[in-house]
Length: 259
Ligand code: PGA
Image (tube, rainbow, N blue to C red):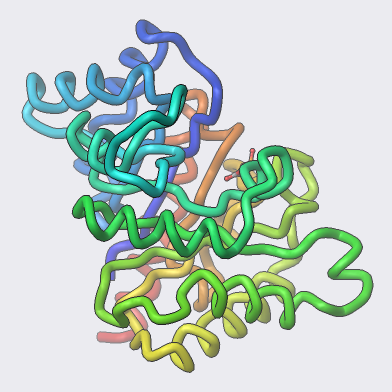
Protein backbone atom coordinates (compact mmCIF):
# COMPACT_ATOMS: atom_id res chain seq x y z
CA UNK A 1 0.00 0.00 0.00
CA UNK A 2 1.22 3.50 -0.82
CA UNK A 3 2.17 5.70 2.12
CA UNK A 4 0.20 8.91 2.52
CA UNK A 5 1.55 12.39 3.08
CA UNK A 6 -1.29 14.73 4.05
CA UNK A 7 -0.31 18.41 4.31
CA UNK A 8 -2.49 20.57 6.54
CA UNK A 9 -1.73 24.17 5.59
CA UNK A 10 -4.15 25.50 8.24
CA UNK A 11 -4.81 29.28 8.07
CA UNK A 12 -1.65 30.01 6.10
CA UNK A 13 -0.74 31.13 2.59
CA UNK A 14 -2.38 33.59 0.23
CA UNK A 15 -3.33 32.51 -3.24
CA UNK A 16 -0.02 33.22 -4.94
CA UNK A 17 2.01 31.45 -2.25
CA UNK A 18 -0.40 28.49 -2.17
CA UNK A 19 -0.11 28.11 -5.95
CA UNK A 20 3.68 28.35 -5.83
CA UNK A 21 3.99 25.75 -3.06
CA UNK A 22 1.48 23.40 -4.71
CA UNK A 23 3.39 23.60 -7.99
CA UNK A 24 6.72 23.08 -6.22
CA UNK A 25 5.52 19.84 -4.61
CA UNK A 26 3.40 18.67 -7.54
CA UNK A 27 6.13 16.43 -8.86
CA UNK A 28 6.47 14.57 -5.56
CA UNK A 29 4.62 11.67 -7.18
CA UNK A 30 7.32 11.22 -9.82
CA UNK A 31 10.10 11.46 -7.21
CA UNK A 32 8.33 9.39 -4.58
CA UNK A 33 6.18 6.84 -6.43
CA UNK A 34 5.21 5.01 -3.23
CA UNK A 35 3.67 8.11 -1.67
CA UNK A 36 0.22 9.58 -2.23
CA UNK A 37 0.15 13.28 -1.40
CA UNK A 38 -2.90 15.20 -0.26
CA UNK A 39 -2.89 18.96 0.32
CA UNK A 40 -5.42 20.62 2.63
CA UNK A 41 -5.16 24.29 1.66
CA UNK A 42 -7.28 27.10 3.10
CA UNK A 43 -10.72 27.23 1.44
CA UNK A 44 -9.76 30.39 -0.42
CA UNK A 45 -7.17 28.45 -2.44
CA UNK A 46 -9.05 25.19 -2.98
CA UNK A 47 -10.69 25.86 -6.36
CA UNK A 48 -7.61 27.66 -7.66
CA UNK A 49 -5.37 24.70 -6.82
CA UNK A 50 -7.83 22.30 -8.43
CA UNK A 51 -7.52 24.46 -11.53
CA UNK A 52 -3.71 24.41 -11.26
CA UNK A 53 -3.82 20.60 -11.06
CA UNK A 54 -6.05 20.39 -14.12
CA UNK A 55 -3.86 22.80 -16.07
CA UNK A 56 -0.65 20.90 -15.35
CA UNK A 57 -2.23 17.49 -15.78
CA UNK A 58 -1.96 16.36 -12.15
CA UNK A 59 -0.68 17.17 -8.69
CA UNK A 60 -1.42 16.27 -5.08
CA UNK A 61 -5.02 15.41 -4.32
CA UNK A 62 -6.89 18.17 -2.52
CA UNK A 63 -8.89 18.27 0.69
CA UNK A 64 -10.93 20.73 2.72
CA UNK A 65 -9.87 21.47 6.31
CA UNK A 66 -13.46 21.41 7.55
CA UNK A 67 -17.05 21.17 6.40
CA UNK A 68 -20.53 21.83 7.76
CA UNK A 69 -22.82 18.87 8.32
CA UNK A 70 -25.72 20.20 6.21
CA UNK A 71 -25.68 20.31 2.43
CA UNK A 72 -26.82 23.94 2.20
CA UNK A 73 -28.74 26.61 4.03
CA UNK A 74 -28.55 29.69 6.21
CA UNK A 75 -25.25 29.02 7.99
CA UNK A 76 -23.28 32.22 7.49
CA UNK A 77 -19.57 31.59 7.16
CA UNK A 78 -19.86 27.83 6.81
CA UNK A 79 -19.02 25.59 3.86
CA UNK A 80 -20.79 22.32 3.09
CA UNK A 81 -19.12 19.04 2.15
CA UNK A 82 -20.86 19.35 -1.23
CA UNK A 83 -19.24 22.77 -1.78
CA UNK A 84 -15.85 21.38 -0.75
CA UNK A 85 -16.29 18.61 -3.31
CA UNK A 86 -17.51 21.07 -5.92
CA UNK A 87 -14.35 23.16 -5.41
CA UNK A 88 -12.25 20.16 -6.42
CA UNK A 89 -11.52 18.35 -3.15
CA UNK A 90 -11.56 14.59 -2.68
CA UNK A 91 -10.86 14.62 1.07
CA UNK A 92 -11.90 16.54 4.17
CA UNK A 93 -10.43 16.77 7.68
CA UNK A 94 -12.85 15.93 10.46
CA UNK A 95 -12.32 16.37 14.19
CA UNK A 96 -8.92 18.05 14.06
CA UNK A 97 -7.86 18.85 17.62
CA UNK A 98 -7.76 22.57 16.84
CA UNK A 99 -11.44 22.35 15.82
CA UNK A 100 -12.21 20.37 18.98
CA UNK A 101 -10.25 22.65 21.31
CA UNK A 102 -10.76 26.11 19.81
CA UNK A 103 -14.20 25.67 18.24
CA UNK A 104 -15.75 23.30 20.79
CA UNK A 105 -16.36 20.48 18.29
CA UNK A 106 -17.55 17.25 19.88
CA UNK A 107 -17.32 13.60 18.84
CA UNK A 108 -21.01 13.81 17.96
CA UNK A 109 -20.33 16.69 15.59
CA UNK A 110 -17.47 14.70 14.07
CA UNK A 111 -19.98 11.91 13.45
CA UNK A 112 -22.33 14.30 11.61
CA UNK A 113 -19.44 15.66 9.56
CA UNK A 114 -18.32 12.15 8.61
CA UNK A 115 -21.84 11.47 7.36
CA UNK A 116 -21.74 14.74 5.40
CA UNK A 117 -18.40 13.83 3.84
CA UNK A 118 -19.70 10.44 2.70
CA UNK A 119 -22.94 12.00 1.43
CA UNK A 120 -20.87 14.38 -0.72
CA UNK A 121 -18.50 11.70 -2.00
CA UNK A 122 -15.48 12.87 0.02
CA UNK A 123 -13.01 10.69 1.93
CA UNK A 124 -12.90 11.95 5.53
CA UNK A 125 -9.62 12.06 7.45
CA UNK A 126 -10.75 11.67 11.05
CA UNK A 127 -8.29 13.04 13.63
CA UNK A 128 -8.08 11.57 17.13
CA UNK A 129 -5.62 12.02 19.95
CA UNK A 130 -5.19 12.60 23.66
CA UNK A 131 -4.20 15.73 25.56
CA UNK A 132 -1.09 15.79 27.75
CA UNK A 133 -3.21 15.54 30.91
CA UNK A 134 -5.00 12.49 29.51
CA UNK A 135 -1.69 10.83 28.63
CA UNK A 136 -0.30 11.56 32.09
CA UNK A 137 -3.40 9.97 33.61
CA UNK A 138 -2.75 6.96 31.33
CA UNK A 139 -6.06 7.46 29.59
CA UNK A 140 -4.75 7.49 26.02
CA UNK A 141 -6.29 4.18 25.02
CA UNK A 142 -9.67 5.04 26.56
CA UNK A 143 -9.72 8.46 24.90
CA UNK A 144 -8.88 7.02 21.47
CA UNK A 145 -11.52 4.31 21.85
CA UNK A 146 -14.15 6.85 22.91
CA UNK A 147 -13.35 9.27 20.07
CA UNK A 148 -13.45 6.51 17.46
CA UNK A 149 -16.56 4.80 18.81
CA UNK A 150 -18.57 8.01 19.09
CA UNK A 151 -17.49 9.35 15.71
CA UNK A 152 -17.97 6.07 13.88
CA UNK A 153 -21.04 4.78 15.70
CA UNK A 154 -23.46 3.26 13.17
CA UNK A 155 -21.35 4.39 10.22
CA UNK A 156 -21.21 2.12 7.17
CA UNK A 157 -18.08 -0.04 7.68
CA UNK A 158 -17.16 0.13 4.02
CA UNK A 159 -17.41 3.91 3.69
CA UNK A 160 -13.91 5.21 2.85
CA UNK A 161 -11.99 6.53 5.83
CA UNK A 162 -8.53 7.72 6.79
CA UNK A 163 -7.61 8.21 10.44
CA UNK A 164 -4.87 10.40 11.91
CA UNK A 165 -3.49 9.78 15.37
CA UNK A 166 -2.42 13.20 16.57
CA UNK A 167 -1.45 13.54 20.24
CA UNK A 168 -2.63 17.06 21.07
CA UNK A 169 0.56 17.76 23.02
CA UNK A 170 2.65 17.12 19.90
CA UNK A 171 0.76 19.37 17.48
CA UNK A 172 2.68 22.51 16.59
CA UNK A 173 4.83 22.16 19.70
CA UNK A 174 8.00 20.67 18.26
CA UNK A 175 7.56 17.83 20.76
CA UNK A 176 7.19 14.63 18.81
CA UNK A 177 5.82 11.39 20.24
CA UNK A 178 8.39 8.65 20.80
CA UNK A 179 8.31 5.80 18.27
CA UNK A 180 7.08 3.36 20.95
CA UNK A 181 4.23 5.72 21.88
CA UNK A 182 3.26 6.06 18.22
CA UNK A 183 3.40 2.31 17.56
CA UNK A 184 1.34 1.58 20.68
CA UNK A 185 -1.32 4.21 19.95
CA UNK A 186 -1.61 3.15 16.30
CA UNK A 187 -2.07 -0.46 17.38
CA UNK A 188 -4.88 0.66 19.73
CA UNK A 189 -6.51 2.66 16.93
CA UNK A 190 -6.23 -0.34 14.58
CA UNK A 191 -7.74 -2.63 17.19
CA UNK A 192 -10.63 -0.25 17.74
CA UNK A 193 -11.23 0.11 14.00
CA UNK A 194 -11.24 -3.67 13.63
CA UNK A 195 -13.75 -3.86 16.48
CA UNK A 196 -15.91 -1.37 14.60
CA UNK A 197 -15.88 -3.65 11.57
CA UNK A 198 -13.26 -1.83 9.53
CA UNK A 199 -10.77 -4.23 8.04
CA UNK A 200 -7.03 -3.74 7.61
CA UNK A 201 -6.10 -1.62 4.59
CA UNK A 202 -9.57 -0.10 4.59
CA UNK A 203 -8.52 2.77 6.81
CA UNK A 204 -4.91 3.93 6.72
CA UNK A 205 -3.68 5.38 10.02
CA UNK A 206 -1.47 8.45 9.76
CA UNK A 207 0.67 9.97 12.51
CA UNK A 208 0.52 13.73 13.04
CA UNK A 209 2.23 16.09 15.47
CA UNK A 210 5.48 17.97 14.80
CA UNK A 211 6.61 15.68 11.97
CA UNK A 212 9.60 17.27 10.24
CA UNK A 213 12.39 16.17 7.88
CA UNK A 214 14.61 15.20 10.85
CA UNK A 215 12.19 12.89 12.65
CA UNK A 216 10.33 11.65 9.54
CA UNK A 217 12.69 8.73 8.75
CA UNK A 218 12.37 7.14 12.21
CA UNK A 219 8.60 7.73 12.36
CA UNK A 220 8.13 6.40 8.81
CA UNK A 221 9.97 3.21 9.80
CA UNK A 222 7.26 2.30 12.34
CA UNK A 223 5.30 -0.60 10.85
CA UNK A 224 1.96 0.70 12.14
CA UNK A 225 2.38 4.12 10.49
CA UNK A 226 0.71 4.36 7.07
CA UNK A 227 1.66 7.99 6.52
CA UNK A 228 1.76 11.45 8.10
CA UNK A 229 -0.49 14.43 8.63
CA UNK A 230 1.91 17.37 8.65
CA UNK A 231 1.23 21.00 9.54
CA UNK A 232 4.13 23.42 9.95
CA UNK A 233 6.72 21.38 8.07
CA UNK A 234 4.46 21.12 5.00
CA UNK A 235 4.62 24.86 4.40
CA UNK A 236 7.90 24.87 2.50
CA UNK A 237 8.70 22.73 -0.52
CA UNK A 238 12.08 21.37 0.65
CA UNK A 239 10.72 20.08 3.94
CA UNK A 240 7.50 18.76 2.32
CA UNK A 241 9.59 16.85 -0.23
CA UNK A 242 12.07 15.57 2.36
CA UNK A 243 9.19 14.10 4.39
CA UNK A 244 7.75 12.53 1.22
CA UNK A 245 11.16 11.02 0.49
CA UNK A 246 11.34 9.54 4.01
CA UNK A 247 7.95 7.86 3.51
CA UNK A 248 8.97 6.61 0.08
CA UNK A 249 12.20 5.10 1.44
CA UNK A 250 10.32 3.39 4.27
CA UNK A 251 7.76 1.99 1.81
CA UNK A 252 10.58 0.72 -0.42
CA UNK A 253 12.24 -1.01 2.54
CA UNK A 254 8.96 -2.53 3.70
CA UNK A 255 8.27 -3.73 0.13
CA UNK A 256 11.71 -5.31 -0.07
CA UNK A 257 11.07 -7.20 3.18
CA UNK A 258 7.79 -8.60 1.84
CA UNK A 259 9.26 -9.90 -1.46
P1 PGA B 1 2.14 20.15 13.09
O1 PGA B 1 0.55 20.03 12.84
O2 PGA B 1 2.80 19.23 12.09
O3 PGA B 1 2.46 21.60 12.84
O4 PGA B 1 2.40 19.71 14.48
C1 PGA B 1 -0.05 18.79 12.60
C2 PGA B 1 -1.54 18.96 12.48
O5 PGA B 1 -2.11 19.83 13.16
O6 PGA B 1 -2.19 18.24 11.71
